[in-house]
Length: 290
Image (cartoon, rainbow, N blue to C red; front, side, top):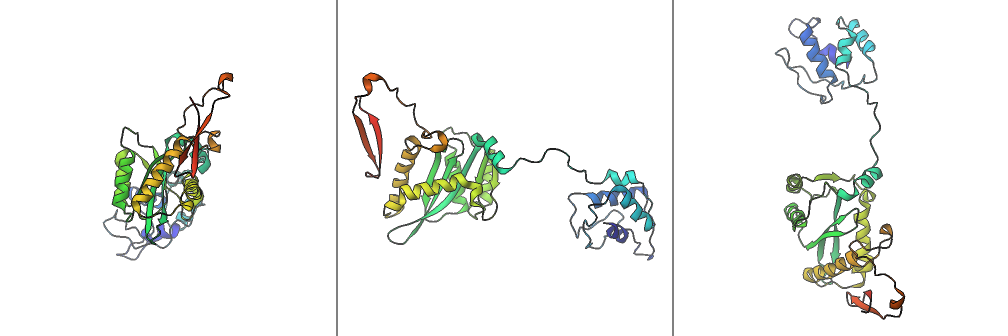
């Protein structure tokens, strides 16, 4: 920083260094310690443009006295309190919570979304977009398409928040190009904050990734998909089963939208158990006969 200060304070008209006036020094220090300053910023507080500085913030470990001494060695007189006025403050508060803490604290306000691919028997690629609620594990929305675009994804997020559903506070997704500018603008209009996961970090969106594994191992790996219409019908039936009847270990072996289990009365122990098939017998739902 000190070389940059010396370079800026050099008089390019006369070729002589000089001390700045009070106002000029304040402007210089405000620029030097600003968190928004970037290398190569043009400075214009004296009517002239400063050259691009290659020094950056080298002396970020120095204190106010050290910076005052270095400036004094260059013939620039300034008090240590003036330097301290524009120095970046040291954060002495509590550290920011980690990712797991964030997910646990805001689970009720978090949705997660993702895409995955499905291949038909005719070797065509279909794309599935889904949204899942973190706290309840309920699949809120699922749609299929052959051509996923940012505009299409924007419309789907609007449909997911329809039918009197309150938009989430946070939406977790990866950095795919399908989440483009129009998608971000729509989220902002809905009052939802977009939370992008780091590059190549699927565990940051683990709940969504886990649902992709479930739908593949429990459904799609056992079926031959003909076309987009067939895929949408299969996924609709599986999501209904997943939300209402499939038990989840993270929910105490309950389904996300399951009703309260019937009471096990002594006079009902001999009742017949009825099995209803799901997805052509791939899964079954069990109920007690009336």
